[in-house]
Amino acid sequence: MNFLYSHSQPQEISSRVGLDLRSIKMTERLLGKLRSHSEFNCFPQNSTSLLIQLGLMSLVIKQGTVKDYRGSLNVLLSKTLSARDQLNSIGVYVSFADTLPESFDGYPWFYSLDWKDVEKLYESIVAHTYPKLATLGNLWRPLIIQLSLQHHPNFSDDEIMFAATAISPMALTRNRLRSPKNNWVDINWNTLQSLLATFSLGTPAEGFVSMSTHKKNLPGIARLITQAIWLTGMRPIETINCTVIDRRNNKAFIESYGILDQSFKLTNRSGDGGKLIDNGLHNFIKKGATFDYTLDQRKYLTLKIYSAKTTNSSSKINKHRLMRLDRINHNHLQILLLTSCLRWLLLSQSEYRHLTKICNQLLGKASLEIIPNLKYPITLYYLRHAFINDARRSLPVTEVGVLAGHTSKRTLYHYGGKYIRYSKKAKIRPWFPTPDAHAVKQLKQHWNRSIGG
Image (cartoon, rainbow, N blue to C red; front, side):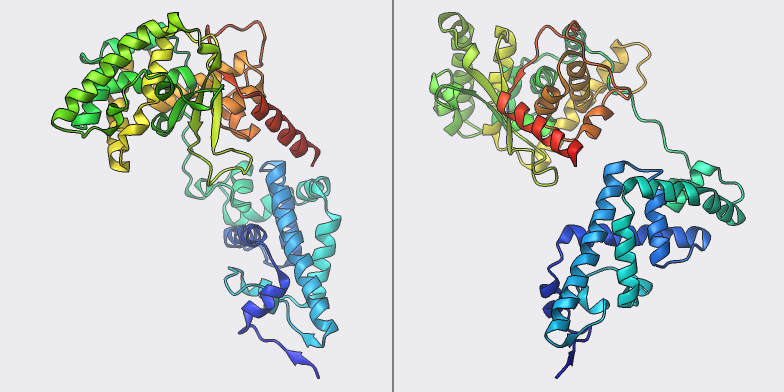
């Protein structure tokens, strides 16, 4: 006896199909782009148009993104066809719409495809690799432009292509995207100190005490965070989630060698706690001033940063990244040691935002006064971008990727606008942290696999 599953029973059918979330979402986006194209110049919505849409997109966006769209559609079609065959073998007959999840955000024309249309579309997708899609796109490009000019006679060819592929909605509004900010002006240590000199009085230690006791944002804390980001290229949020460790025992350096009294972490943020914290910092500065000369431990020190982008980025980004502090000078080491104590403040989200707002205001005001012809005020992220751009001129790209917490070449090459070639002779800064060798090896393998695929 044959049974017919209706679309009112999606969960049972979709469980047999086993579609992954990525394939579903990418296909939904592709269908959405075809709909936008249809609204733009009355382009038809059907299986043939879907293939043409991929061809046009191959002329506008990155090759890897086109491959993702093609691959996701390929997976969705192949799995639905496979599920149909399995169900047919046991006497269960379903439509194409029945095999799609109930949550699938499709369109009537796509749901209404019969199995012959699905098979033809699948065969076409398999046959049209990326080079063939590009050829198809070049074939249809003049026809699409001619069709679009009937509806939008004032549009340029580039604007038509962006609108037709739904890459940039700005083309439809006739607005121009503002050119990206030049956030990579060279900022050396002396220039940075000139900026900090315009701040009100307050040492990094005093600013830290103020944050610990009364949550006041003295300029001292801005000095601390600003210098730490310039030295390491950390994201601002990462300055409150890092620690300096000793690689020999994998323990926090400050606690291991008693540079900061344990009572420092346990005191309250008001009353006598302020005195205890003040005393703890006094001991920190006093011991830190002599520690470097009594024990040569710098070659064992590593900055452990808990990466800010681990839940919404590449799976290849670890939860933390390591920077070896070989050859770091004594004053810079003190800055990073004190920065590693910021994690003890347990700042709330609103407190952190207020802190970075103060830092950016102080930096921005100082930069416009000190640096001539500066188009945009300097911010904390400005310093991170400057670090990455300097590193790209002095270090191999994989090492820069590990230091910055990036695994995407496209993201890394974006910094600085134009790619500045790595040169062993370049000496932009006297010191850069050394990336973890194992992480560099992993990133090389990841990129090699990406190129090979």
